[in-house]
Length: 177
View 1 (cartoon, rainbow, N blue to C red):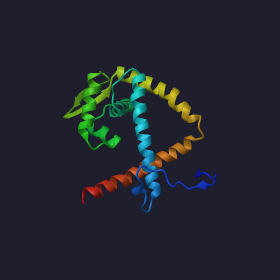
View 2 (view 1 turned 30 degrees about the vertical axis):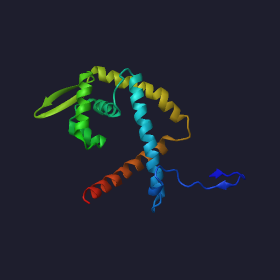
View 3 (view 1 turned 90 degrees about the vertical axis):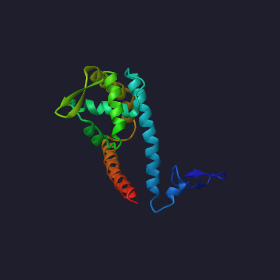
C-alpha cells in the first residue's frame, strides 16, 4: 500500500519487472520471478566480491560455484557431476571454468579410466575456507540479525527447488513447440 496526496491508502499491486506477465492467472509468480532476478544478481555480485576478498579476484559467479562444488565433500568430480548438481545444461561453460580454476592452481585434474576427475588443491581448500569465514562474518551474521528463522529459510529453499522443477518441465515443453 502507498499513500496518495490525501493520505488515503492506495493499492499499488504486485511488484514485478514485467506487468504484462503479471496480468495472467498467477500474478504472484511474476512477483517471485522479480524476486529471483533481484536475488540472483545480488548473489552473483556477492560471490564475486566475496571471492575477491578471499584473495582470488577476477572469478565469475560460475567459477565460484564450480570451485565450491568441487570442494564439497573433498572427493573428485566429473564435468557431468558438476553440471548435474548445479543444474547447468551448457557443459562448455563449466569446462571453461575448470580450465580457469586449474590455471589458478585451485583445482587439479586426474584420469580415472576414460573419465577426467577434478579435485580441489590445498590452495583451493584454503581459498574456500577464507571465503566461508568472510561469508560467516559479513553475510550470515546479517541474515541472523533479521527476523528470518533458519526454518523459514529452509522452507524457502524447498519451495525454490520445487519451482525449479516446474520451470524445467515448462522448458522441455517449450522446446518441443
